[in-house]
Structure formats: structure tokens, C-alpha cells
Length: 199
Image (tube, one colour):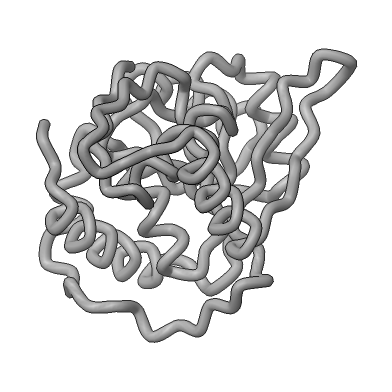
């Protein structure tokens, strides 16, 4: 599926409204899916809604996902066909009723929502996301990041790599990983480059 910048803007606004209907500002929404346009739309939709995105690997086992759920309290997740069974098994084990948004029907999730900004005030220092480390020396750790920190890191990457609007980038690192979403995709978006997602 090809998505232009204009379409991405429109769909992220719709996603922000869809999420704002379900969740209050500052609520956490989990991402457990493979690289896809839905990931990008959900990611920026969450940011525009004032929600906090929590990113985990689509390879997580139920016990690993349960650890994150207990730490963060996330009960709304964006999943795909591959990760949904793990998510459902985890929530059954935890005994919680969770809200699963399936990326395979993301167009239906967005349908009918406004294409204008959500009426929520978001400050640069507000919490933007929680990014989990790999946990090589123990349990993964949730790293708390602000809107300002993500903007500044994207600007630095565009200048340092450097990136240009004519560039075409293969996004081969998982978007759930900081290298995929913050070091590569967000700077590409800022530069106006073309990103090709590989699952």
C-alpha cells in the first residue's frame, strides 16, 4: 500500500480522533505489530491525540508482554494478524479485558472520523512514548521520552546522516525498536524522503 504525505496527514488526524474517543490525554496505547503503514499512522495518531505510545517487539512471548502490561497498565493495543494471538493469550492470562485494534482493518477504524486536529493541548515536555530496551542484562526497561526529545533527535539525524527529500530509504529495522522508528523513519519523514517498509 502506497501512502502519500497528504494521505498520511489525513489518516493520522482521523486516527487521533478515533483514539481520543476511546482514551483520555496521557493514556497509554501499545504497539505490537510489524512494520506497516498502519504502524506509522497509529504512531502519529497517538502523538496527535495526546496519548502515549508504548512499543514492544512483535516477537514478544505472552510472558514478556505481560511484564510490559503490568509495568505500564496499557490495555489498548494495536496488533496485526501475527501478533493478535499472543496479545489475546496474554490478556486472558492476566484476566483483563483489553481493547485490540487490528491493523488489518485499520481503514475501518479510521473511517468517518474528522481530518482536522484534535482539540487537545500538547506541550513539548509532555510524555510522547515509552520505548523498551532489549533487556540484555535483565528485564527490558521502559525509557520515557518527551515530544521535544523526539523532535530534536530527528532534526539531528537529518543533519548528521544527512537526509534529503529525494532519498529513498528501506526501513528494515523493526519500528518497535528505537533504531527503526527514531533513528531512521522519523528523520526520513522530517526530510520528506520516501520510506519503504519491510516487514
